[in-house]
Length: 182
Image (cartoon, rainbow, N blue to C red; front, side):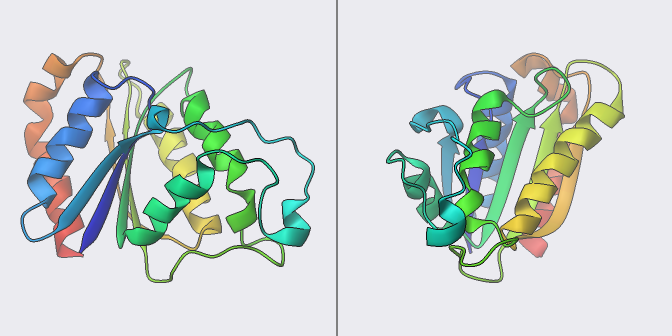
């Protein structure tokens, strides 16, 4: 299997990045794994022009197509997102907005190869799980419009720093086993 693990945060060395690295470590045996950070890509904001509804492509030239090629490469996609004010980081939201050419609510639309599975890990510093559930819901909504089947989710509360993950490794490992088994 080919697995893409994406850090939805622009921070390349924080708790989110640590989870990405941990997931990679646990799922790479017998799989090919790529990890990326949303900040690795230049992504311009959507202009809302809807030209892509007629052409199935955006007129803007940046790295969205490059990142979508990585999505297309993968059999399984694991999105790891922190909470930024009770939602996904703005950089990842801009990417989602720019994926409108691949959105299945209009024709024509670009398409990823079929049969992809999506997994989501949300983390936040506070103790309330509904915030993680909101992030997961937003990412699963995105998956749905790309025709990626949502297959697993994990919410981690009380995580601000890498060190906060030490007591959560079993949860993450169990989640990785789910990814490997499906």
